[in-house]
Image (spheres, helix red, strand yellow):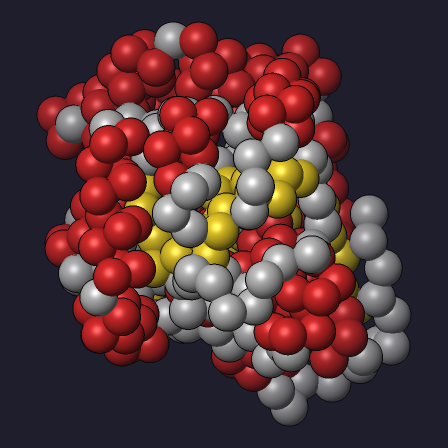
Length: 375
């Protein structure tokens, strides 16, 4: 059986979900041909640059315009217009990806972005491919662009997400509440004392992890300044070199500062709470590791919707002021039972084995050629 796992590299969440699925399938489905494809890399480089660069520019420099785009494409009365424009834009600029799917005609297409899902549905309707389409929604809130007639299966983050998807027109029987697929390293068990020794962290201190994505944005420097005397802090600055240099030069005691890392699961394993942005993947990884999240600098649109879903389920706080963040952290530090009860809620919502369950749904009992390779 041939399986194509496809995504769009606009934001990191779609890619990380697709990679998690690919890596698990590659290891656990040796009898199937599994391919990983960035749909935009097959297409017009100008379109690719606008699609990816435009998203990055808007969320970093014109949030008001990004929010307007998100709102206008969510507004029911405008959906026919925005869907038509979206379809013809993709049809014109994504010819190579269209042709690629026709040549491959896999048994399954697993998509973590609505653009390749829309492409697959058009080709299925035109009887150019006979693939089954599995759309993996990588947020807890549901944007209408995800809802596409012709989808064979939806994978959603939570029961709330399932209900919202149904309210937007999807059929209940094709929705599976498996969770957002994350890398298996976030569902492993770790020796906290050994990791603390490795990372230079004191194991018996309340530890706060701060990580706000690849740009390292938000009131991180102010939050660290308010809390470093109260709790142990791990800060991931990622690609924000100015923040990294500033915090390193301040040499706060009890503050470990990192740049870009690939061992986030280890930092999570030694932490009690996390301050982060409410991206769907980050939330899923944090919950899998049992971390109570405080959300800051949410991008208007999908991230504010994610934060809304979590806070409605009594998981996480969405705070905009550094002083409020300090009060919340100290409240949980000083009331261990409150944090313990919050983690019970986390256990009810988290889906650490989503990728394994998806693999069982797709691959179980399906023979195929022994080949597995990325593209």
